[in-house]
Length: 191
Image 1 (tube, helix red, strand yellow):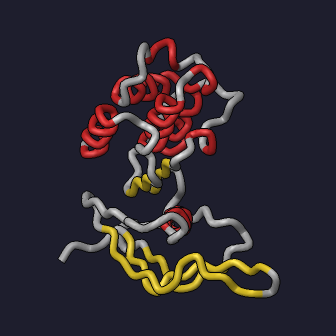
Image 2 (cartoon, rainbow, N blue to C red):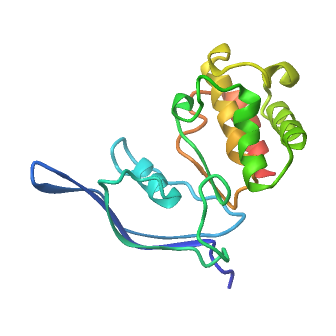
């Protein structure tokens, strides 16, 4: 039997409002296996994004977390950005408007892969090309506002995979892309 990358047992996430505890998730059990894909499907408000945030350790401080998330497939506690890459539906939530794209995509590689500045910049250029950003060399020095929403989403994907994370969480990350680019990104993420 393959050791799961992560096991989730009895996961619940609740928030308090007006003195009442409201569950965003309750009783979630799942195993995440390295190299496999898992799709979480549900209607709006069913807790898909909350589950993503819980796995990545990015829940807001006021969230009440119950159950367990264990990482038997890692030999250390997971680190967001290194072990877990996350791409949200809105790239505006993950791209800094005052930093150049190259800096943002290269940051994970520099910090987590211990690449020097030029090697990390080259990795960023390569990834921008792989996610089909036109003229990756020029894109490195551009700012997020200079790209369309779909391009910003592809840039966010490049940043999320820059450090080669063990787990990549996509929270409706391709919903803003046209179907051809969605297929290309799906192929990229398979590699």
